[in-house]
Length: 271
Image (cartoon, rainbow, N blue to C red; front, top):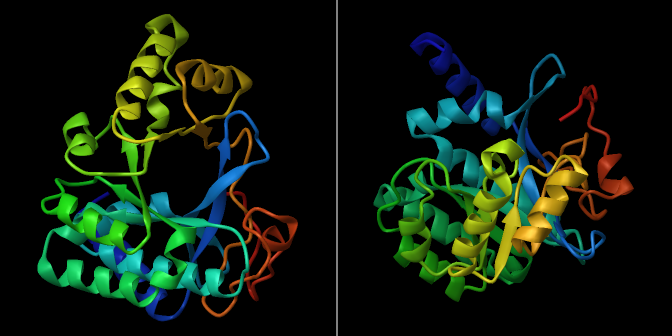
């Protein structure tokens, strides 16, 4: 991706935020011993293009992160999540929070104010910290938002800046182990590597989620390693129809009601 392409993606995404064309699909995080038990459903950002196509976060989030605008997207998705929670009597959501939110006073203040205003929903919202950059000041901020009642997860543990040093420097409730470790070739000792990763994460948090579960073999590996929860296409595909501003649906995330949410001008596509 060249600079002009990245700038165009950023302009498109920021315009979509202003026009209410940013939404989210959800994917469940399931208990490993009882697959029907859902601890929460993660909000996965989606962009509704002018031609009706739905664009997944992987196509626009990297450009937003590189340009420093990821916190804008975080606040947009959080607003949608709070709207959904206000219209639903049950169910919990999880929202990504980029470590770029901790990079300056303004971003930190705007995020904290947003969370403080909506603290009545704190018991039903998990904040997933994505370590796309060094997170200076994250430990203090996480302590403050946990005092508001929010649960905090470290996302993609074991890759990028989500290191053992990072998770042991802050108090968190959940550690999510990156899909890389369960998708390693068995000949490379995937089972032993995953076992060590889960054991290490367990020293930092009581709830350990292994991401990227796509096969029963991977599910078995995660269970044998000692994970408490899993996330992936095997047990929960992201809902096809995203939730957009003003269209938050009271059906439980991942349910037939939420999956069948109709959006004008939207053509269903796989996530």
